Length: 238
Image (cartoon, rainbow, N blue to C red; front, side, top):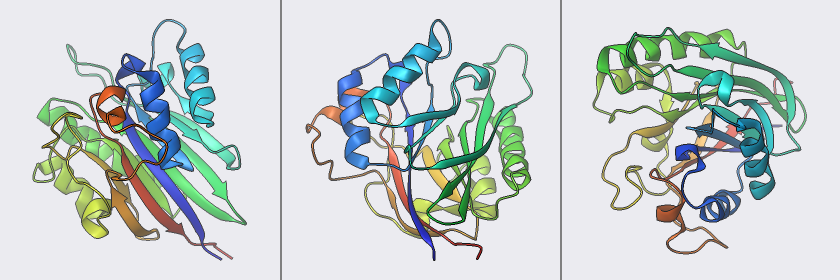
C-alpha cells in the first residue's frame, strides 16, 4: 500500500526573525518531513536545532553546521534508515554549500530518499551544484526520492531547467497553492521548489494558502521566504 507523505521546504534565515510565527506556520503545514535551508550553523547550532524541534514537534534527522545550513527534520513516527552529509566543492570567495541527505521509512515498507539543498547565488557554481545534486539523489538508492530547497533561480533559469528535466517540479506537475516564494512580503519569484523522482506521485504542491492556527501575518514575520508544501504518494515496494 502506498504511503501518503507531506514534505515542506523552508528557508528560515538562521531563525533571525519571529520563531513563534515560524513555528505556527510549520505546525499548520503539519509536514512529515521538513527540509530546512539557512538553519543556524555557527555558535550553539545544536541548541537552536533542538529549539526548532520543540517549537514544531519535529525531530532532528541530519544537517545543520556540518552541511552549512541545510537540515532535515521529520515527524517522530518516521524511521531513519540512514543519513549523509554531502559537501559540495568550494569556489574560493563564495559561500560554502552542502547537501543534507536521508532515507526515511513511512508506514509499512515505503522508503523515501530526501535531500535538502540550497544552491549558489553564482550562476556557474549553481549549474555545477545542480549536477551534483542529481548525482547524489541517484546515489541514495531509493527509487522514490525528493529534493527540496532553495534553487536561487527562477524556473526559466538553466539550472532549474536542468533539475526539472530529470525530476518532477512539484508545483508544475500538481499545483496546489501559490507559486511565488520570495520575498515573503510581496512574493514575485518562484525560487524554492520540491522536486521528485518518477517513482513519486505528486498530488499537490505549492505555497500553502490556508494555515489553520497561524496568524495572517505569520508567513511574512517568520522569515524572508515562503514555504513550499508538497503532498506525495510513495509506493510500497512490496
